Image 1 (cartoon, one colour):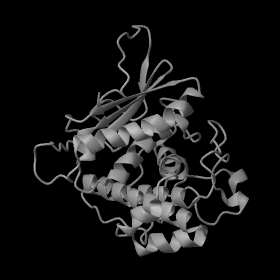
Image 2 (tube, rainbow, N blue to C red; image 1 turned 60 degrees about the vertical axis):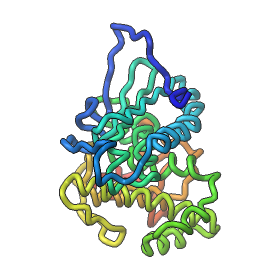
Image 3 (cartoon, rainbow, N blue to C red; image 1 turned 90 degrees about the horizontal axis):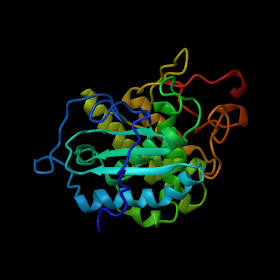
Length: 291
């Protein structure tokens, strides 16, 4: 019964085209293509268990199944606990929105449980994140936007009803996270939610940095580069941490949908008076109407 939340595709039409937002299985995905393998039997992993792996997936699956259904689609999730791949990916099969989550990524020594949940939210972001989108496949929000959606909308929806004050009381919260969260949010519950999500983002920033050979990314060292046009593929690890953090600091409700064509809708923009919470310029080039 532990796998009851997975939907098995017993019959697949031979004429249906599969398109991947995050590369192909086991290759490029949430993270750039890499050869890391982290076995459930090896040493040096983070202590993630199969039970927690499946519980995290099921929780988000249950929350987002009706959200996806409202878009006239079917959410399909495969939890590949035995697969050592350090990645995750998303694809479509007709109206089926398919997400693959791999045990290797969940076991990465720098990945926390909340960080792993944020990976799931990133994959959902390819379907629900809105503009800007990839050129190929054109249905998918690009990598930076999927990161932004993950912390701005998805993880807030997932964690909102939990006792986040109690959760963060047991965590080592980065002082910069606390400082920025308290500038944006006034209610203690909202501050705790912001802290919790920001630390999930830091976990993933460190994982991504480790894949690149340097896990030293921090809230206090934001990426100061500026792109000439919006970059659609994987930003640098520090830039991705900045994106998670800015998404956390954007106080737009998760109920305010983004738009597949208009990047201004449902997000924080300079035009609307936001000084924090906007998409980082290290991957995003705002349109003239957003400034």
